[in-house]
Amino acid sequence: MRECQIEKNLKNCNCTWEPCSHKGICCECIQYHWGMKELPACLFPDDVERTYDRSIKKFIEIYQRTP
Image (cartoon, rainbow, N blue to C red; front, side, top):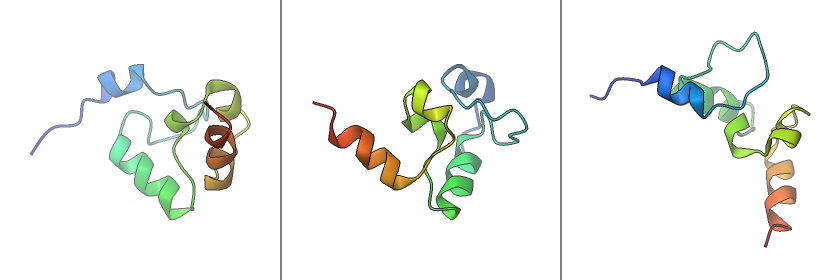
């Protein structure tokens, strides 16, 4: 089994939610957000991530208009 590379993951994590206990632990982050019918911050551009709208609808809206 692979070990979580938290420090490496944190370098690519753009989550601005400070009390987040899932930062750097991608498997927990994905499970948490998917359980709320959301996607994790790393799938959104920084400006959208800061709105905390992590909905699937917002994801589609953003990437549907991207060439």
